[in-house]
Image (cartoon, rainbow, N blue to C red; front, side, top):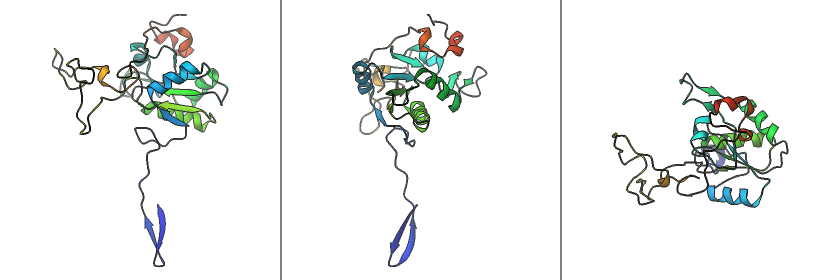
Length: 213
């Protein structure tokens, strides 16, 4: 609320809050958002930079940036709280895991999730705990479907498939990451399905069937 004086009268004027930089309009306490390409350039140029992938274990196993560590937040496994397989991680638990890996609160940290939402929330937790150089990947690992100015989904890579629109052989919408604005799709940045033991939370290591030392 803003208080404005007009002809000596006090008028309360409601002003909508502005988005702070991320695509979901969350409050931003962390340093900034950045594109997948900018994140990759930073990680290549500055070896002290840390990439934390906060996606679930299932999402990480399906593919991830090869230089990332997986600290899943707030969903460790399962599709949601109604899923019998669901396992969650609290804000405090997430902070403990990051602190054990990155004790230096001035270290450059980049958070990433599937589409930019969870990474912004995770980045806020770190910033509020005193980490001063935290950024979040705006569009995440897969991101959202690229559209034209009218919001129409596009076949960006020209393969005849529009993500989420074109129907596959089974009659359900096909998935085409190449039409999405994240790390692994339109940006064509390095990905891996190789899960290294040191890249995952130790107490969850048995939940990664492909994890190796």
